[in-house]
Image (cartoon, rainbow, N blue to C red; front, side, top):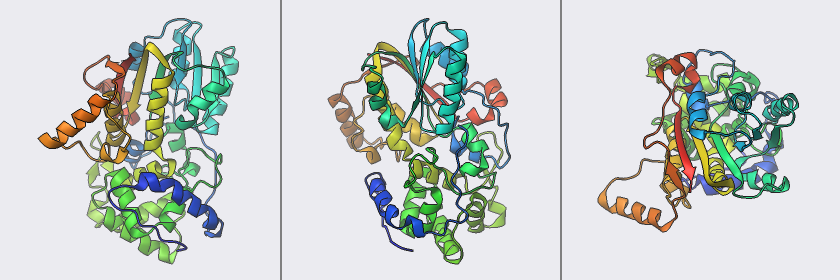
Length: 391
């Protein structure tokens, strides 16, 4: 190992992330990378929940909670809509087909998804404007198009990994399909960005355990991190199935499929490990926070905002942002449920009151998919929708 990095469990990983990338640039070329293949793939939906099934699911793109999204966004003819996670374009296509003269700004960080958006733009007389970039780059992208803050009528943010990325084994997201251990949502846009193989072959055991605990909420993080470190001493871990086998090898055989997903199907013990690595590699929670701030900036007063999340880390962050919590110190909020003791609750309430609440909820409780929708689209089984109006 060329360098050791210690990351305390208090999760200063957020602040260390960019530093890690800079360090990796100096030695990445020396890694054994013969089996690490960079690839572009296809783009919608969440990684953790798809990984929780060891069986392959239909590769067709079915937009999650489409009926509910269209209802709560309440888009009118001629309005401007921002789809912050274009992916396979399911939501965007439905909006174009149902609402005349609507214009859609289609953002995605995956170049392959943007290629699909460009094709859709040709089919719909340029009513679709593709935007290649991350949530954190959105405001600059809109500024370059002379789109001012407070001018968008409706925004949709469908968080997490995309189904098409999952369906392409060469992207390295899927536990059920062998491929290079990549997991970069940006593809090759940032060649110096570390991939999942870099993470598992470079970080020390303590750092790996912290990542698995923080981003996968994995109870057996130390055991898995130890197994990874032992395995990579023999051979670098460069393939998805290789990593899955290493994780499985740290458990008794009877435990490997003992976990169940939300449809009570067998779930591989490496599911949470894959989620944690994906979130860390793509800086997903920081990006999600940036996306929420950007949506708040670009929406006009009275504009509507729908956010779909797929696991507790995402949903916790979104919920607290929409409630007006001060998220300047992210690790105090979404890495563990809020402490409900009187003292802690008072501090949280004080912080919330210090900031301005910019949102009015359209539904008091979180919205979940109907049973029939889950049967039709199992990948959306863990989806949670929050719908609000900008004040």
